[in-house]
Image 1 (cartoon, one colour):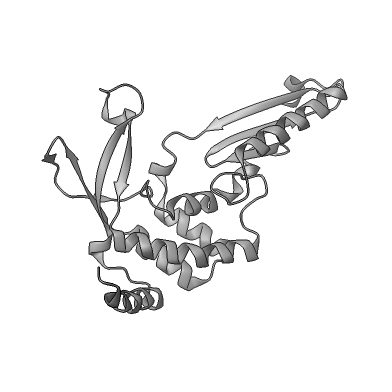
Image 2 (image 1 turned 90 degrees about the vertical axis):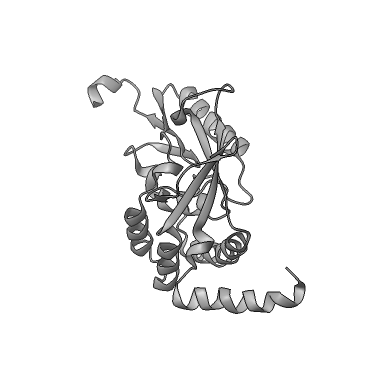
Length: 224
């Protein structure tokens, strides 16, 4: 697009943010299926990657920059989360977990770690549940309304070896390949650290390691 045309897009983006409406054409996705293991596999063993409209990508990034400020000001994202957050690394989270476990063991405290991995977590994002959590978390209504407009009325087509599927609606999940999906996901699951009461949680995106510790001489079986 010629540079002198971008002012039209600026007006369109501003209008979209003000009215919380997104052109349906922006939400049409061409989907590519990548095999998780092996060259040939079943459909449920593939990872769908969304080729998103370029104009939609720009708008997502513009919105994300504003959304992150809201999350930071309200302290919504937990310190235990290291996934998709600038300045936080997986290596740091692993070292903290090892250090914490070592400290407990040095005091002869019984320690157990529960590892949780949610199957197809990104693909199972519940639209209305997500919107409800955003409102409960105090996200301003205009932001929530725009996210809702971004989630609904999506449709996709899959192309394999030149053959295309019919267009089909997307009623759950966030597009993998979007700059906004990951942040929305960890916001939706910001309360996941409380999954196991009394545990110290370490999160990386949808992966959870919950460390439980008890007093010396107390068996875990007696606590269950």
